Length: 409
Image 1 (cartoon, rainbow, N blue to C red):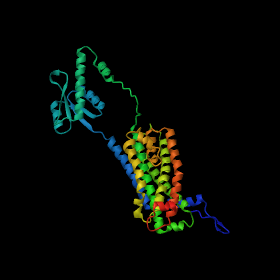
Image 2: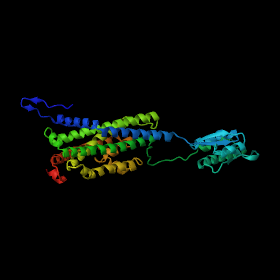
Image 3: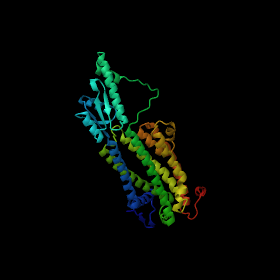
Image 4: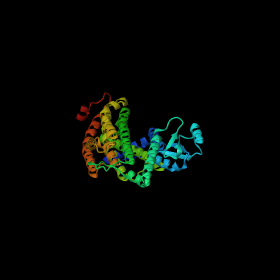
């Protein structure tokens, strides 16, 4: 329920700036949360995110088992070990005879049949129905070479197991002059989600601000509101109210995603410092939403029809699209990209790029603080310019107001 202004003997006392701003903000929150569009989009966001996690769980957890038969029980363990080393899931079983194994090949029960060479010699042959799976061929070729090596070592009086261990342990020692930090899968997933959610939320929230301004201007509701509050208070209240609703929507989606990821085990966050990552994401959301929503509110005040909103906000929309695309396409694959590092200090790019760098763990604390400080220093200038445009254009209906005229008043 809205707070009414205190009455005095001379009439209602004027609202303070904070009271007027929060009154407008509460009106926006109450109206938007009750709207079916908000409820439907929130449910859709949750369903899409949870469905994506479930698909990743079932697809990622599904393994393709290759059934292999053999007439020699002594090679079962060796074939299974070779398969595990190659990342294959081999189900190796012993068949009574080659005829039985070939029958299983014909009915599709087996993909390959391993048969020892005739005459008791070392090595084995592989029988298939039509063709041998390329990955399985690589595994069996390696096993054949290993058996040949073991036979030769034994013939020379050596220990095949000791030689094998020594051969497998040998490796080239690599020294990197400029070592690059390793990024685990969890960091990449969190960085990707941070970039996508930041873009979607800022874009949708800012568009809602512009559309709300035009809607009130078209219906002449703004004239009634401005009889109680000043233009700057009205604009600030709309930004705060819609920002709170957008943050609520993101929070519900993130909580649902976290629960689904935890239950399914899709994302292992044990190596991540999720607290700082979430904190920086929230901070940059607040800064980014304030930056872009006040610009959208000012630009929305220039027009009087919803059809004109998209055209008037296109320049700012492009400024939002560029860092978003760059962050996902360039910065995540190459976290130390110099262009991305420099761009993350630019106020209009920082809300999209810095959360990604924070999630990837490549942005030290001083860079995060410096970028945030630069954006906060620029923000008052944007607030002043946007407030001037909004105040001079919001009551002017009809033809589109030029930006020059709005600034000049």
